[in-house]
Image 1 (cartoon, one colour):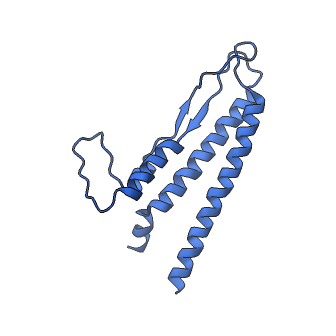
Image 2 (cartoon, helix red, strand yellow):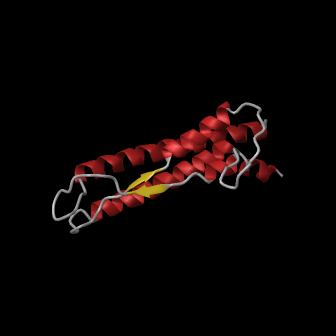
Image 3 (cartoon, helix red, strand yellow):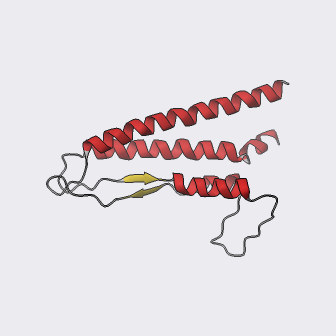
Amino acid sequence: MFTDAFSQNTTISSLQLGIRGLMRRHEILAGNISNAGTPNYIAKEVKFEEELAKIQRKLRYGGGIQLTNTDEEHFSLNANSVLEAKIEIEEPERDFITNGNNVDLDREMLNLGKTGMKYKAVATMGKKFFEHMQTIIRG
């Protein structure tokens, strides 16, 4: 029962999605960088923050309203809905640099650094969350 409470916690689900999304972004950025000289390679980007923020706003400001799914395409607002947020991989519109390749190494390296900082921040938030939970459990 206690572990079930953790699995339904939207903070834990948000942290989990953040870590998964940032890890996926790191993989895609590394692939972009390693293919910077590959002819006709199209750079990719990972997007998930907007959908996560939208779900979190609904969870935060939904109040005590009980929602009912009236269509199978609707999603329920709980910890599972956070985990169902999509991590999308896109090919953004960019100018081609050389030989049909549109990888901008400066942009990719900057994004790699930002991703590393975000990952560290999310990991720190997770650590703090569990430290607080330990304090509550110990009393």
